[in-house]
Length: 95
Image 1 (cartoon, rainbow, N blue to C red):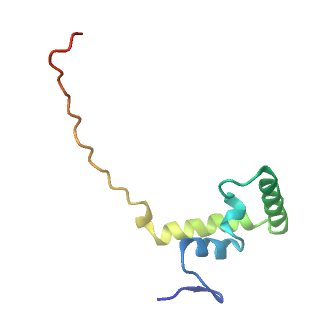
Image 2: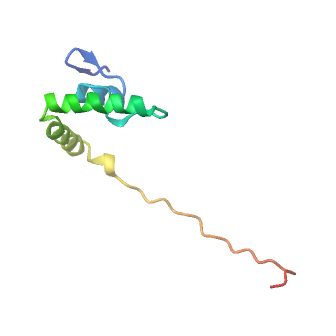
Image 3: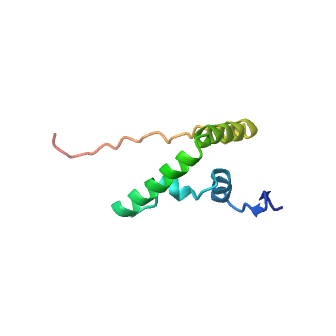
């Protein structure tokens, strides 16, 4: 099954996020190992986008709320049982 948003095919979660944002996710989150200069340029671009699209944060919150509403199982938490700690007794060790 293929999923399209507009004319674009979304293959991964990153594709969905990019299509929802209209920008690459890395623009907002950065990339590992980026230089100070690269970070400053990325943040400048993000500021420009926010200035041109002032409703973007509200739209993103609305999208996130819809995803949560449509997929409540995303937050199903199943506690994992931890094995009981075994105490080891050392014999012949002076305290």
